[in-house]
Amino acid sequence: MRIDCHVHVVGTGTGGTGCWYRPCGYTRIGEPLLVRAVGLTRRDLYGPDFDRIYLEKILGYVRGSSRIDRALLLAHELPHREDGTPMPERSSFYVPNRYVLELARRHPEFLAAVSIHPSRKDALDELETCLAGGAAALKCLPNVQGIDWNDRRHTRFLERMAEAGLPLLAHTGSERTMPVIDAKLASPRVLTLPLEIGVTCIAAHAGTGMILLDPDYFDVFAEMLARYPNLYGDNSALVALNFRLRPSALRRLTREPIAGRILHGSDLPVPPCGLMPWIGRMLATPDYLASRQIANPLERDAFLKQKLGFDQATFTRAADILRGAVAGAEQKPQ
Image (cartoon, rainbow, N blue to C red; front, side, top):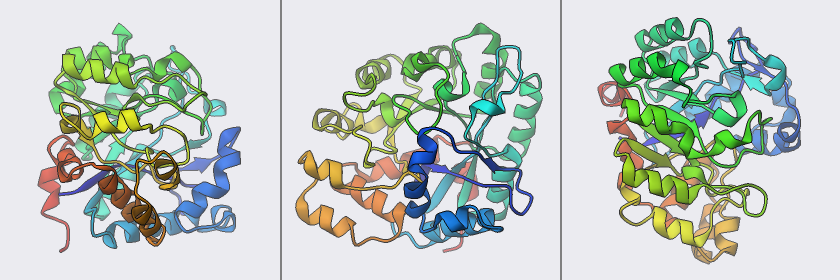
């Protein structure tokens, strides 16, 4: 079972999905690239049926891929203050948990990653609802949503996650597409308390940062791997035009002991592109040219990751980590 563990849902609320999209800052700048990455246009984005069209595109990409069997769809929570007050004005988009849970129920190609801010007044109740609804993981962006997982007030929430076997997929490293509330929460160290409590954690992007623009926490991630056997990373966005990947990091990511702890993720709708790895001499010219002929972005991203040296286990490892992934695999049509 080959899983892309990092696929974003985006919606504008058409069809009663409950999603909304209010771009600000870098989100607005990158908007044309993001919609183009999934084969859509800004006219589609602001049209009357965007949510259905976006869903059908993602579903078609999974079904049409020879390298990916299922995709983990990510909900997106609002930032919250410490007292539990939501801050919608500090967010560029919102995707409710009920929507991704429903998509996963309707389509065996999908798994659902819910998103719950632990400071929410109803956080534990929402967690129970999501567990009952089949959540495969919990996704968050600590620096964007203002979540300090090391805050002891979140202990019971984390204990319940550990009891339920619900992994935590947390953004680590650079973030330039959404407003950042607390930059220091980009470090993988934000996962220390969850790891100590026993939650399986996946550090999205493996702590990598944009060269010359943001701190890089890859060494912190690597050091934590040696300390916590329940810590993993994903390789999402590492072939995007974001200056995250460098040869030294790639060598370590694709060799033991780190290689055995990496999961495959694309970060769609962030567009996969082999240009930066090719310029950095990490990708051979024939492979770069071949990638440009692949229209399916999930397939292109997987192809590029394979050519960069990520082995087959990188694609299948998530099936043993995501809650309910193996049980649900029987439902997928062959």
